[in-house]
Length: 214
Image (tube, rainbow, N blue to C red):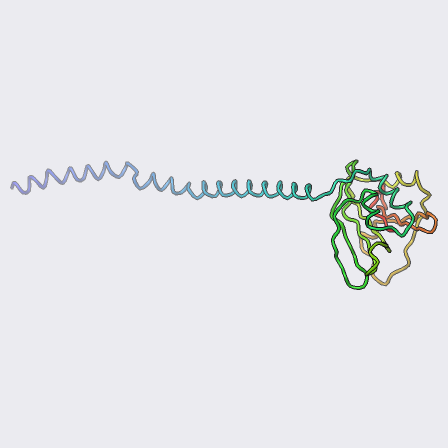
């Protein structure tokens, strides 16, 4: 009897405790938190990845800006020096003209080909590279020179047509198919004595100058 009474007294206490324990949500509250945890972790990961990506892009842009040499010459003055200086010219003369980008040897079979790093002129134009070719043992005599300009900011061809007597120039036909980029380009020649310079520009207005060959 005492045993039954004790049991009957304890049993309701255990049942009430269980009823009180379950609504507390010990299992439910953590479940809600755990359900949101992957979303929080995912959001934090995306934010961190975006931040690292932005930092990487800023660092790359800064590195490119630091690599670019700064010429003391304006672009029109530099072009004038390249197209009017009688040849043959030497690499040392290029530096005196304002071509201050560091050169590196790119090709050493047959003619030696040197190419410069990007360079920014005093008036903000970018020369992507200057390339020249020489014979082995005659590095001071440049045989041919190429200068390639970035298409932005645009240096309009009109800046040259008002200064030089440019004539339309057509390259001899080639067996290679014409590319889409070549179809959007045009060429003009500039004769300065025995020196002939070819100016390459965009066919569409404002005919941004893309480079020259001398």
